[in-house]
Length: 186
Image 1: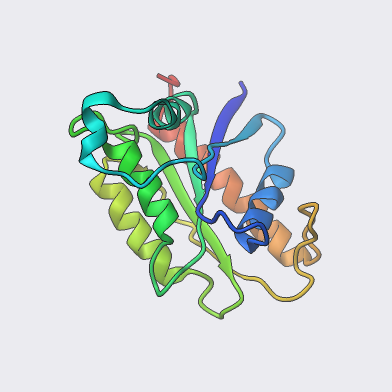
Image 2: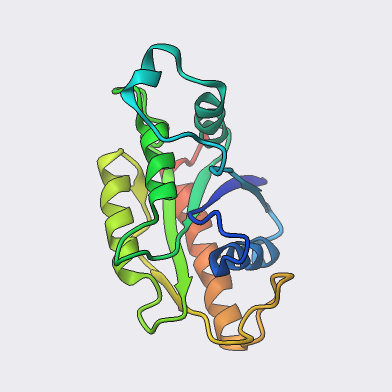
């Protein structure tokens, strides 16, 4: 049975190491997993003013989340939290009230930085937001990756065997989480 896993990259930077990490995850995904990006770059700043006439880009985001079995959020850490562009996308997905796209959706967070804590603080904030939105967040294993020079290639290859093994295991754990949350793929 093929599972479709969506991923959101919480950075719109063209040189994002988290975008590179997303390419790594796509490359390492199990054979029975199709990875699809859920784009966020085109979303305008969220405002309740949009709720009376939700724009197509906001509806597309919600439809993309509904179309997958689970969502991986690959996030950088900005000022010990998540980037504004990611929070904006999550606000779009959460609204209008009572119509949130992440309710009962299996979610995992992962991220990379050049610093030693590898996005740990940002991911803790992200997990709190996702739980508030009704997502079912994978607790373990956590994915705080320190990107050292040369760890990943631009094509999404991992040059460190230990890191590759960890990421493969992390992905398998998320697939198990998805299967536990959505056993019948409702």
